[in-house]
Amino acid sequence: MPLTEPSDDHLPQEDLVALDGAVSNPDDNVVSATSDASDPATPGGGATGEPESTLPEPTLPEPVRQRIVTLTATVLPTLPADEVPVPLRRVAKFAPNRRARLGAPAIAAQLTADPLFRQRVTARVLADAGDLGAAVVEGTAPAAADPVEVAALAYLARPRGWRELIDASGAVVRAEADSAVVAELVREAEQRATRAEHDRAVARVEAEKLRDELARVREELGQLREESRQVARTLRETQARERKATELLATERGRAARASADVDAELRRARARLAEAEAAAGVARASAKEARSVDDARLWLLLETIGQAAVGLRRELALDPVDKLPADFVADAFAEQPGTAPASPAARARDTDDPARLDQLLALPRAHLVVDGYNVTKRGFGEMSLEQQRKRLITGLGGIAAQTGDEVTVVFDGAERMHGLPPAPRGVRVLFSRKGETADELIRRLVRAEPAGRPVVVVSSDREVADGVRRHGAYPLGADSLLRRLARS
Image 1 (cartoon, rainbow, N blue to C red):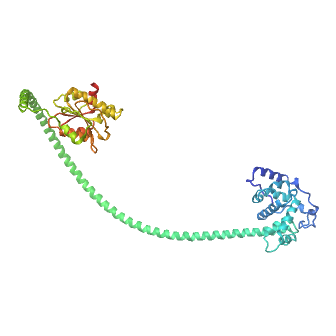
Image 2: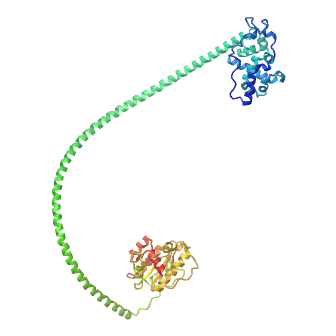
Image 3: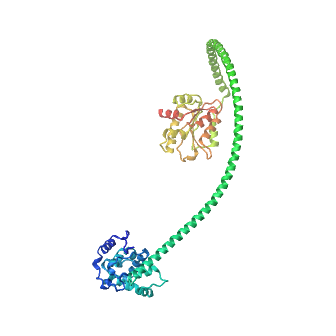
């Protein structure tokens, strides 16, 4: 093939510009060839006796071309600067590993176009080649020599018969390439044979697996057929039972229709009896109303008698007022008191948030009002601090105690107790639950301590507290009823 080759696409832009100039203008630095090149008698003359310059460049095998470029690139930096053609001066400055790769097009073009440059390169290459170079110059090649190296030196030195040396090298290179191809084909054939043998072994194993699987599937198919026969037999039996059930259903529907007719008749008779009973009930209600009027009169007379008897009994027993109330005993045993003033007991209430109902209950004799402190304050004025909440509630309860004369107890959780509280208003008892006990438990304990029959009103929006105190006879009211009562005061 020709010595030149396309330029390398990876060459930097400035290098490509320099090399393009070298390839496109190779004659700018060509030194005039000596007349020996055209002399048929010179060693470089053609085999036919034609002048060397008239013969075309031989087609070089690719390994020979690469070796020529490598040899030239190796000796290029050793040439004096004035002997290096202008297009190759920039290439001579390249790094060794880049010189042959990037400068190959310019080097090949210059070797073809500049015989003087080629002679200078040949002189240094032959000097480095030693005996092999001398043998090539004489037109002979040692049998053990590398044919590529011989062809490269023959191309540069161009002794008599150099074209034949290049052709012989090309034949050897092609033979080696063919041998490599044949070896590669043999290796691939052996690999394919090995793979085929492996595939056959795998296929045998898979065939064994498939035979086992087929036997298993056949066994399962036999089982499925037996199950299918059983299912078919069961289906026939089920269909027979279904026909019997359908017949029974028709019979039962007839009976149900007759029973429904009987029930309708009985219903009409019951409605008639109900109408008669309602008429009788109307007469009974009128009689009961008249009897209740008589009972109300008797009850009023009985209460008047009991009241007068109670006044006489109190005068007869001459009981003195007590110093402590039941709630005081609970407070002493199960609560912490910052300082209290006893109040008077109160009355039982119903589930309502109406402040008027609270007033009715507090109007009962000896009523006791128990308040779930933080449940009321956090619902009514939770934006305040705990100290301000307690102070505002206790002050309001003092007003209620003063107006009604009832006993008032307010209970707070002891975990947040503040020391140094101001004295509670007269008639208001302030309690804090002890450690390990909640205010709800203390409230239920206070309610259980009261005697049966005394009205106790518990103010809390906690449903659990309300249900607990109701079971012990107290009247639970929501926190809103007390908040509205305080807002009205």
